[in-house]
Image (tube, rainbow, N blue to C red; front, side):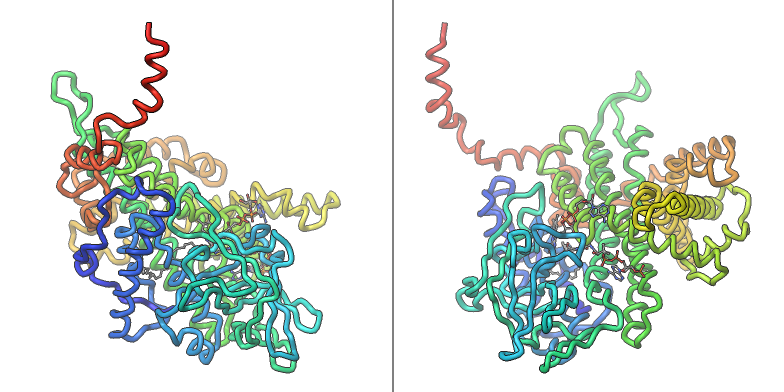
Amino acid sequence: MKCYPVPRENLVLSIDNLKDDIPEEYLSHKECYENVIRKGSVLYDIFSELSKDRKHKAHQAPSNAYRISDGIMQNVNPFLLHFALFVPAITNQATPEQQAEFLKHGFGIIGTYAQTELGHGTFLRGLETTATLDLETDEFVLNSPTLTSYKWWPGGLGHTANHCVVMAQLYVKGKCHGPHLFFVQIRDIETHEPLPGLKLGEIGAKMGFNTADNGFLGFHNFRIPRNNMLMKNSQVLKDGTYVESKNEKLTYGSMVFVRVYLLSDMAYMLARAATISVRYSAVRHQSHIKPDEPEVQILDFVIQQHKLFISIATSHAFKICGLWLWQTYSKVMEDIGKGSMDRLPELHALSCCLKTTSTRDAGWLIEQCRLACGGHGYLMSSNLPSLYTTATAAITYEGESTVLLLQTARYLIKSWKRAMEGESLPATVSFLSEYFNKRYNKWENTPKGIVDGLKLVVAGVTKMCAESIQKHVSRGQQYEEAWNSSSVQLIKASEAYSRALLCEVFWFEVDKVSSTLSNNLAVVLKQLAELYITYWALEKRGDLLVYTTISKDDLDKLQERYEELLALIRPNAVGLVDSFDIRDEILCSTLGAYDGRVYERMMEHALKSPLNAETVNQSFHKYMKPVILKHKI
Ligand SMILES: CCCCCCCC/C=C\CCCCCCCCCCCCCC(=O)SCCNC(=O)CCNC(=O)[C@H](O)C(C)(C)COP(=O)(O)OP(=O)(O)OC[C@H]1O[C@@H](n2cnc3c(N)ncnc32)[C@H](O)[C@@H]1OP(=O)(O)O
Ligand SMILES: Cc1cc2nc3c(=O)[nH]c(=O)nc-3n(C[C@H](O)[C@H](O)[C@H](O)COP(=O)(O)OP(=O)(O)OC[C@H]3O[C@@H](n4cnc5c(N)ncnc54)[C@H](O)[C@@H]3O)c2cc1C
């Protein structure tokens, strides 16, 4: 995947016209969009200049470049899909010749990824947009045969992008070959007018993501050259011959890339929420612990530490697991480049459950950070509401969470069957064989013991699912019906698997590098990793009691250790969030600024409200006064 140079923060943050005079929450829907396009265009220009100086390297961990834009935009960048999906789709799914052709204008074109339709988002084989080969003209004819076939949701599609990669059902000589990707220009480069045969627009206001310019697109006999089908994996020749892909799911590869990336993206979202809420909790004094002493920092309440320290730990867990998953992704992509697809199902399963858990956890943990800041967390100027609505969108986009967990469950059940048949399994599921062969240890109250226990839960629930499916089949259900009947437990198996993976990777990656770190840093990182693992052991104590040999006494000791860890982390809490090193201009929060001038910043921000431009709003004289006077006694 092309990696865009990360413009130095100082360079970007020094540009005056990237700052907002009026806070975005006081702009109209249209003004908001125009404002982010103004700022995004400046960033786009910087990217263009910077990228001319450096060679792009494929398959590098994506830069955090767009995170700078996150701060500048204070909302979602409408150019994001160009970088997140449009370019990666072309890089991963087009031939080298096509890449050279489609990307020859570099930053001269702005693209998006148009897959979801009004009627279908999850079930890709049900997409209705058609691309039909016209042999005589050597073209594909794109059509939206129904209202439900209109592309609906793609970011930047409404008014920003002039090109897109479209997922459409491929028809050749009357035969449907399933979903394929096509490179399509949708607006005139000069005038930006929609091209003839297209219906384009934005889908309207959302609970967040309101500057992403999510749009709709309908095709009416819209023609593109045959060569505009991305043909790296499958081809349509000039004579209409269809050459199928070695694996039809390679077409879904761009989604895997974003799912993999979202883990580290959620790490960053959480780092921001934790920074805001922990710093605020160090500034805010409220109530007493000892009646005869002054009001305390709310961070001294142990329950406040319980609410917030898990977010610090989880941010590190997602960052470390995100790098681990990125390395797996890069290796699998390398193998695919050499013709081996063996690990693609494993990568798909890992990316599905880890994307789901990281986005769900980011959502509820950011909400927990907001609530821990009391009323001031509810102010838009705290930036916690925007962080929440931006993060929670990821639970749905790039694969709805339930659907993706079921994909992982599909892999777990297949792996369990292989374990029963004595086959060797990849390391990420080899514990299923150990469980099946009853090779597992008694409970230990250690991080490794907890990880082993969480794996036993996965194995036990997976076994229960397999037995449930078998039971329904033996009662006469078809396999797919039996699968549906067991789906509540299947989701539980995937959730347990994801949690066990996160705990295992977090603990062992930290343990692995700790000898290379200064003693103090190693101690603190291990405390965070142990806090994370112990937190989840206590959260999942019910499952541990069912599937492991853990005792009530073990649980009491874990609770005690957890509270010890809160106390150990407390002195370093502010230092830990400071070490996320997120500048005020990117944090965009009156509660979380580095200097701790919370109340002054809150008042400064409040005075920027347009309503405060005058002491009496005109509505008093227009509407209130007549009524007051009429009913005055
Ligand atoms: C100005 C400058 C500033 C910006 C600078 C930016 C620089 C930044 C650089 C990089 C940044 C990157 C950052 C990204 C951050 C995130 C931002 C994102 C913003 C929002 C994006 C949102 C985009 C979207 O939402 S796109 C649409 C997403 N849609 C989906 O995910 C659809 C979900 N549905 C599916 O995936 C499938 O339909 C399915 C899997 C649910 C079912 O498919 P199916 O019915 O065909 O399959 P079956 O269930 O029948 O069989 C399953 C079978 O197939 C295998 N399988 C399925 N999927 C895959 C896959 N993807 N890969 C591999 N294999 C797959 C599965 O393993 C099964 O195999 P079996 O062997 O078991 O049969
Ligand atoms: C902010 C945002 C940005 C987006 N950006 C893009 C983009 O740039 N490009 C793009 O193409 N799309 C984009 N999307 C669309 C997104 O990918 C879809 O919303 C997502 O794939 C879910 O599809 P859907 O909304 O049609 O829900 P559906 O597929 O209709 O699912 C609705 C609900 O039905 C249930 N369900 C569905 N299928 C199953 C199943 N097999 N088993 C069990 N339950 C099931 C689940 O509860 C699910 O939540 C975006 C969405 C959002 C919210």
